[in-house]
Length: 314
Image (tube, rainbow, N blue to C red; front, side, top):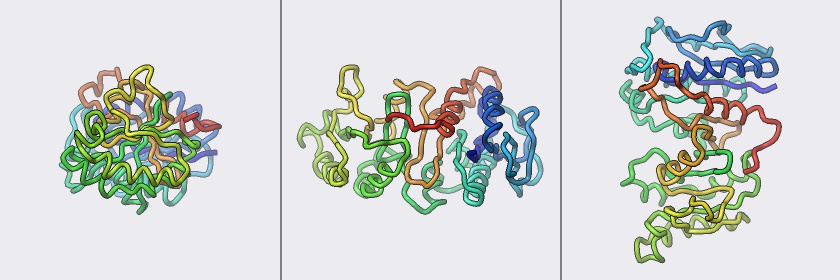
């Protein structure tokens, strides 16, 4: 029996529509697992969902309102605010607290970095970075789909800072995270060059030679099969040599082709932790919140990842 905590994300987003659409599956899984929606005190709710003040021993799907929520808030779908941003961040921290105390896995539903920062949380960069701080260890974002797995070597940083971040990237910890992940089994790895045409042998940029080559050598020493640098503009084309895992130099270099090819079933998996954290690969979608057209495929894929009896062939 698994224990799964779900942080609610921004309560003015599509998240409660996703939960409502996936409610039958959550109830079915709750017959064999403990699933908790970690939420603040507000008006967005799910019908017939029992509310607890602390985790229980038995299976089920429950609402778990974290302590210290104060006066209940009234939110309007599609209308984010500093209050909803703060609620999302506090719910995330609470879910992490429950995980630390009771164990289990974690699903994080989308929140808005903009509104979390506007709520006064300085330096907030995202779930992956917050988890690294909370568990005091390097973490790595892996976008996992039905056929593609992509790790961006830098995550939520401005493009102008990518080279600086690559220079201090921890390749040894990445190697350890890949080796210990239950979702990777001795993968073949292709890494993308930073520059157009992968630098043209140094004629169009030298980062492939001065930064990436040195880092990749550590993966090869760990007995991984690694090829590259690959030209990013053709690495994902039909007919290109496939790899079990792609390493991208920056966020959009890897996530644009991933989302284009995998659609809404992609899952963000955090590597480097002693448990599994997953999240849908889409955002808050405030523009369609309340219109009852949100697609729960990403949340369903997250649940399937956590309760599967064998790992995905990646």
